[in-house]
Length: 331
Ligand code: NAI
Image (cartoon, rainbow, N blue to C red):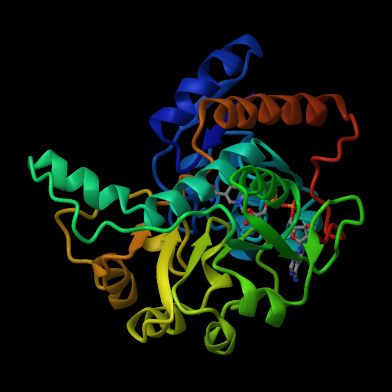
């Protein structure tokens, strides 16, 4: 079987190649993202394999169906970029990788938090220039401070475990609280009012879009640090920028951004970035923006590749798997 891998990067090939060879599957690596103008590149393939920013809407699915493609493999957990209804109509199967390494994302969120709090990127740049001055690099002890976690699923739970290890008081909000979890659940206004640090670990849904908006920021403690490794649209960017300008927000670590699909994973270093909000965020001394890389560990990449190969085997053998995404799936 030939599989067209859209938006594929050298690190994808590194983990996929040996497993594909072993399974006697042939890859076609395509650097471009999937959309209506690139869908034709897969005309010789029998399946496509896509990532978070590929577009698999009705028009693309119609073309895929015309080309005889019956299998869509997501190299990620989220499937908001696939028109599931249209895929079902065209009798296409869609599979995903529901969890690759929740630890990778939780550990990354905490890395962003520590980097912002203790001003490590600034210190690194100074010492690279042999400037050993430490003025302006004051942080705060994490021990005894309060962390508010929004979303206590796989990633949120590991973040809670790590932050408790620092001696922080951890409070949490979840639309579906987990009774087995040893954490104090509070409502959102309470979480905003009490937290020194807020980290987002819920999915993007109509209910969570802009969960951090202007009203939420008004309720927050002065100098709060906000970390987002989930999805950009959980935060209203303009309100975030105003909150930083007004001195309410003391620091921000973003691995995701609401309009990231144009810029993230691409080299824009010699081009003009026209997104004023993104450019503004990057100019703040107390903001770190990274390019949706929280998942990027060897363990997670191996898990993504091996689960995808297993998904292909299950498709070929007609084996039922919870990794198949069906329209009714709602979480
Ligand atoms: P999960 O499904 O295990 O947990 C999500 C939690 O959010 C659940 O406990 C759920 O009840 C809760 N939730 C659902 N609706 C909510 C609402 N309205 N308000 C508050 N909580 C709500 O998901 P997991 O694996 O922990 O992933 C969380 C998110 O992390 C993903 O949705 C994805 O957006 C993001 N992610 C980011 C990656 C990166 O590289 N930056 C990589 C992988 C995931």
